[in-house]
Image (cartoon, rainbow, N blue to C red; front, top):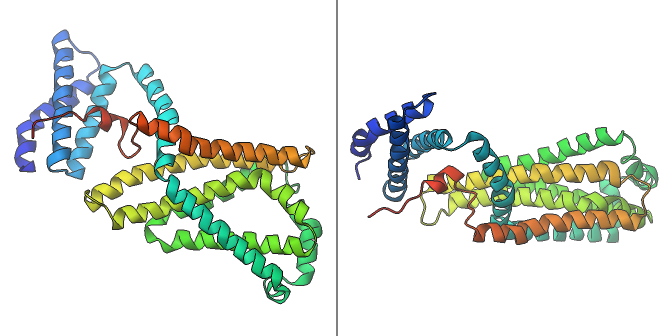
Length: 331
């Protein structure tokens, strides 16, 4: 199909659709024309995607159709429906699409952290090269616990949320490079292993787990998913499958952005746990139970709700407007 010819043939209809969408008042005839042109435009968009996808033209026509749909439907009702759909379907579907990447990334990082911890714990001289003995004792006896009570609860929540969001954002934003998210994940895992070895050597294992587990289960889950989403974006570019590289990167990029939104909320919850639950006077078993419940809820949304959302037809790589505009056409 010649895109230039197709565009020239239908540009007048698209321009009129755009004018009617921006017009404040419509006559009965104009309202009918708006609906008719919207349906035609949706068919044109579907045809363009299936035969000769042009990113610029598809984006322009999608925007025109979105404005027209907003003019046809009730803006208030539409916005609420879109918000509910985004939260209940699109977000879980995005997490579901990166689920196995997340599991593999989490397993690799935890195994690496475990290996570092066991090696450092079994080789005190090596551990002393990383952290001198005096610092180890001070860290285990006071600094580790003081970290969670140094600031006011709300300020501490904001601090850890910002810090964790930056780490997750770095993994996603640099995912296309491949090596940067791997470096960030391994560095984070290495630090966990070394800290665990220090606390074990100083006989402070109980303090370590009682303070790290209430928020750490959810926090680490979010970081692992961020790294997985970044690496998956690189894979989508390297191995696009039947799609063009541009289309593969565009669709998976949308999924990755939605994952970022989900992780932002997740890290906020983790920050609240770290700011209010971890340093609280609650029994240690109850604090860990709260953290485990939050972590379990996150993975339930990823696997359980996510699968349900995908079965319902949710596709985070395609916007709601694009999904509505996919109409069967004769090829």
